[in-house]
Length: 119
Image (cartoon, rainbow, N blue to C red):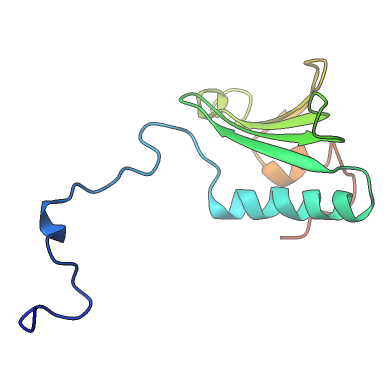
């Protein structure tokens, strides 16, 4: 083992690299930061309590819950298939009503919280 560098993993060359998300749609770091900033403010105000994130082949969904045992109050969706026409982002209520759809995430999030979204 003396001839192996200390940071090298012996036998690591035969391992296949893991694919993180394959062909799934995800939120990037900047998008997730904006969503979590809004979520944090609403949790601090006592309005929201839980969330769930789901990455699917055609869209990414951030669901917001008042209580964990309920249906989501809102779903923030990213659907790249709609990006050219209506905008990739949407805020959808629990009944399925689309509150806002658009190309800019900050503008879409204002449908939930009219305060300025801080980056």
